Amino acid sequence: MIGASTRFARNAEIYGEDDPAEYLYQVISGAVRTCRTLDDGRRQIGSFYLPGDIFDVEATEVHLASAEAIREAHVVVAKRSAVMARAEYEKNFARQLWTLAVRELQRMHEHSMVLMKSAEERVAGFLLEMAGRNAAAQSIELPMTRQDIADYLGLTIETVSRTLSQLAQSGTIALETSRRIVLRNRVALSRINA
Amino acid sequence: MIGASTRFARNAEIYGEDDPAEYLYQVISGAVRTCRTLDDGRRQIGSFYLPGDIFDVEATEVHLASAEAIREAHVVVAKRSAVMARAEYEKNFARQLWTLAVRELQRMHEHSMVLMKSAEERVAGFLLEMAGRNAAAQSIELPMTRQDIADYLGLTIETVSRTLSQLAQSGTIALETSRRIVLRNRVALSRINA
DNA sequence: CGGAAAGTTGAGACTAATCAAACCTAGTGG
DNA sequence: CCACTAGGTTTGATTAGTCTCAACTTTCCG
Image (cartoon, rainbow over all chains, first blue to last red; front, side):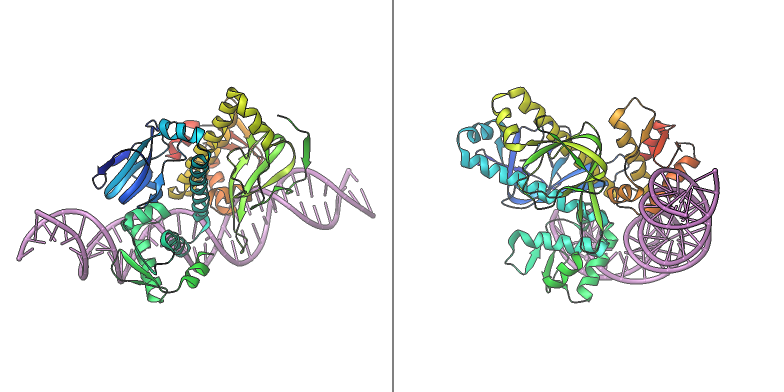
């Protein structure tokens, strides 16, 4: 990706809702969330982006959600116009962009299924999704707070915390620290996930 | 749109999940829903399409959800390849397609907000969304069953029915018949919608 | 060491789900 | 024309699951 790496402080806004979408982004370090907030403070997190992830590929002319650094993050930025110009004559590049957009759509679709899931199913699904980032590792490092997870899953922090405790209790996972989780039994998690 | 009008019986499948996406569709009469179903029977409806609506514009190579006729429906079908070919040289046509895809993305985004909403907010939002189809009319005709609405909003039919009854009770809406609803107070509905 | 932010745990309240029954409405056939 | 049926809808009583409120613990950092 072209462009210099920009540093964003924890909770800094990378772009805002309704802002024009002029760039593509790639996370170098740290983590990013996209979200929309209601007047009364309720927040819906749309997705999380970890190092390596390219985001805002599927952007419309104006952003439908804002993006924020979950913690200090370095992000590479590329001008949309430049990227599109390159895609114009380099077919393979265009195809890669398309693949990223499709993956994002799939993720959104999958995420929309949480509506009909119980708290336990939502949390199990979340852990599997995060583990899917680097499938080999048996433990995952969560860069986001319980509040972020809760707002992603449509639960409260207490319910997220309790559900994780229960999963640990049953031996399905282990909480090394609150942010580092070992998946002891992925089959069980998948079964819970429905 | 090019292509002949096809008739689909109530509950007939227009395309299935994982099927290759070869066509674009436009509803002529009747109504269509897209959905995904889990093994245990739980169903998530992604969207509803009414007469005039063009759907499957945002499709990926393989369908992420199936589409079914809510009731007898006539649908015009156009080959994707033909549509794309035309978009290739007719810039205005391409722009229209893009607009449709963007609208669909916006709708999905808006729909993802139900996660953090109460039953009342979900139902109010649903009514406003349906009313938005033809903004002028003060009453709306719902082609879908309560079960469809419930599966769209992540509620049960009982909760949907009860919530509608409460809204009628408070004078915000009137239930002419179970399928025909008069919006007596859109401002109140918007306020509820948050 | 002290303070703030994040996370966990518990008790009780409340919302929506579940289970069950009754009610419509449209269509069918005697 | 009316009884009968089936699918859809409404309503009631009870239960289950998640939220709320509150206290406490842990972790992180200056």
